[in-house]
Length: 518
DNA sequence: CGTGTTTGACCAGCGC
DNA sequence: GCGCTGGTCAAACACG
Image (cartoon, rainbow, N blue to C red; front, side, top):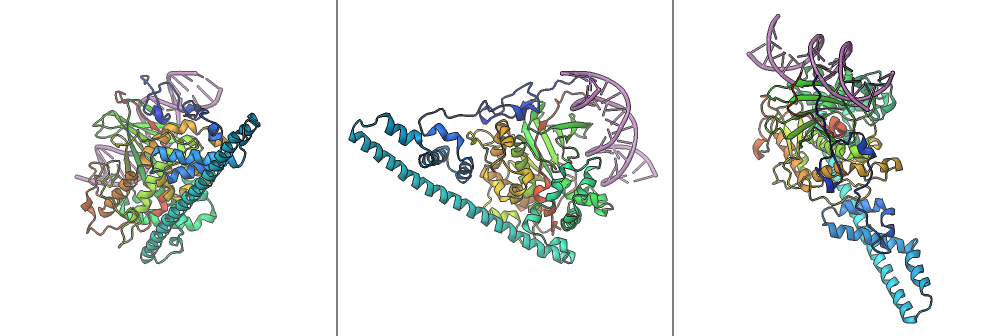
C-alpha cells in the first residue's frame, strides 16, 4: 500500500538526452512541443524556407548521407533547398535583389546576374547530386531486398524439405517479413475478444500466412520452444499457434536510468508485479493500452547486479498505429526482433543474416541474444554503447530513421508502422518532435553501423549455438565459435514472426528497487 | 466517477 | 505428483 515514488524520464531531444525530466507524464510526450528543435534562424535569405520544404528529400539525402559527417550532410540539404528555392519560388533572391535597387549600376546588376547564374549552376549540380544519392539509395535498398529474397528462397527450399512444401511455406519476402499485415490492421476489431482470437480472426485472406506462421511456429518451437511452450507446440488452438511466433521473440532493452519511469510515447497499463527469482527487485508487467486488445506487453525490471540499469523486455507487436514518439524506438526493437527472427531462418548450409554483413569482426556489446531465455531474446544494451547518445546530430524535422531499418521493407511498407521517414500526415507530424529523445536513443542504436553488425553477429552466434536451457545467464556474449556442429535444428521458418514480430514500442518504465514488493 | 495501480489468487509449464 | 516459478487476472484501492 505504500505509495511509490514515481518519476519519469522522458526522452527528449538529443540535446537533452538523459536529462531527467521529472513530472512529465508519459502521455505528454506526444504533446510536448518542439521546443528544442534546433531551428535555423534566418541566417540568410536561403534559409528562410529551409524548414518548410522538401522534408522527404531531406530525409532521403539524410539517409544516404548517414555515414557522412554532420557538415556534409547539412551542406547537401541546405544547398538543395537553396536550389529549389531559386528555381521555384525565389522571390527573395531574384526579385529582391533586382527590385530593391533597380538600376544602381550595371556592374552591380551583372554581378547579381552572375551570382544568380552561379547559384543556378550550383543548384543543378546539387540536384544531380541528390538524384545520384537517391539513385544509390534505391539501388542499395534494392540489393538488400534482393538479398532478403534470396534468403527467403533458401529458406523455402529448406522448408519444403521439411514440410512437404506446404503452400504456406511459399512466401514472398514480404510475407516472410510481414506475416500478418492485415492482422495488424485489425485495430477496430471489437476487442471483447482476446488478443489471440483477434489475431486469429485477422482474416480469412490471411490463411496462407497463418499457415506459414504456424509452420514457423512449429519449427520454431521445436528448436526454441521446447523450453517453454509445449502448449504452443501442441497447438491445440490455432490462435496460439498463430500468435506464438510473435510473442516468442522478445526484445530486451537495457538502459541506465535512475528514473523509475522513462517515457517513449506509448501508453502502458500495469497489470501485475511479481518477485522474480534471483532479483530483489520486482518485475512489473505492462500491457499496451494505446489500442484495445493490443497484444504488446512488456516487463520492466531493474538489473539485479546494477540497479541503475533498467531492463525492459518487449513482447508482441502492436495492432495499431504508433505515434511517432513510439515509432522510432519501436522500429528499432522491431528491427532487432526482425533480425533475430529472420536470422533464425538460416538454411542448413547458409550463413544467415551475417551474409548481409560480410565482415563482422565486431562482437556485440550492444546487441546480444539469449538462448537460455524461454523465448529467443535479443538484448539491446544501451548502457555501454559507445555512441549510445552523443553522436547524434539533431535529426531533421521529420525524423528520418537510420538506415538499418531500411532493410526491412515490411516495416516501411506497413502503413501501420510507417516510419517517420515517410511523409507523415500532419497529425503524425505534430508529435514528431517529442519523439526526439526516442529518436535519439533509437538512432543511437540503429544508426550505428556496428549495431547492425552486432545484431548479425549475435544472431550468428545464437544460430550456431542451439538454445541451452540451463536457465543461467540470460545474455550470451558472442563467442565466434558457437556455431557448430550441433546441427542446430534451426527454425527453417522463423521468419513468420520476423519482422513484425516485435513491433515493439519502447517505454522504459520501472519502479525503484527499493519498492518493497507486496 | 473514471482511470490506473496494487496485490493476492489463480493457472500453466517445468523440473525433480 | 508435487512444488516452484513465471505470467495473468481481477477485486480493492488510490488518485485526479
